[in-house]
Length: 198
Image 1 (tube, rainbow, N blue to C red):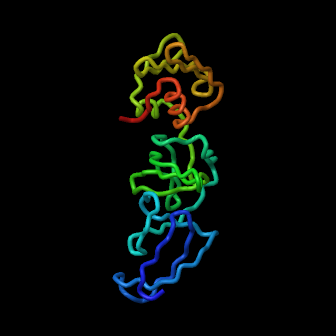
Image 2 (image 1 turned 120 degrees about the vertical axis):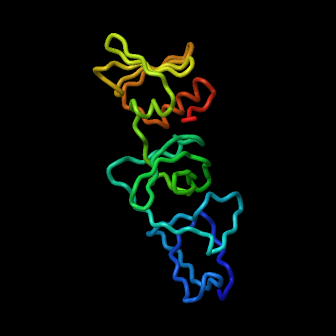
Image 3 (image 1 turned 180 degrees about the vertical axis):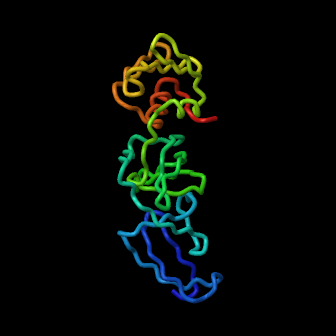
């Protein structure tokens, strides 16, 4: 390959062995490896080209103690946990690549493309609702969270495993724990407005 810059597509998985030259010249051999997964840096635009020097290669480890999110559940703006360097980072979905089933997530580190098995839900609780700027009201064994005309109500006894949400005439009873991105999707379906931390 000489000193030519490597051109790669974001959906490929690579392992690189750089030569002993400086970073200004990058003669390297790229070998496809579908066992070890690396990120490809910032979320690229359509038909991207990248120089080898500009890419960020990070090894990901799948977390075993939490289930993955289905690709079909996600939309831009959803808040999720992403596996990065053997840790989980909270991030916001910025873009979806439906062809390759990849999700661009912005964390405190950077924007990266992830496959769904490296994304996990954040379970809904009081702390998460406070971050989403809901107002809390307690009364007669129930807890109500309010944001504009949108309401969430749950009993102190059952907590977040059994709750009602409503917006005007649209009322829904959810009898299982809800993740933050699932609440965001309900909120958008009901109000036609995105729910975020702003």
